[in-house]
Length: 113
Image (cartoon, rainbow, N blue to C red; front, side, top):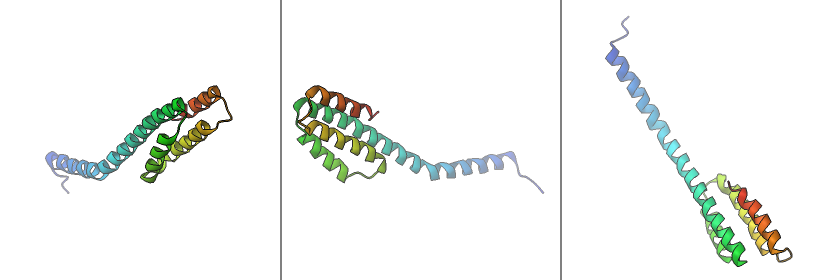
């Protein structure tokens, strides 16, 4: 029984590696894209939340939240959306002081990281 030449073994190993790359590369790229979208979503909402707190108006934040929620294709973003809802409730609560709002919103924004 012959095992074959070294060149045949190298060729076979290269073919196996190529198949593995072809099978797992799309999965890896999709995961990277989801992570990038989540990161961008967090950064955008941090800015919108800070602007809403400064202006004491959540109209822009709520509009962007609704659009983002509707086009959400990942369950990974559900935690982000729940934090945004909490921030909207805090900003819209007129029974607490501005300092308390700022403190609570900062705690929520810190959870994005």
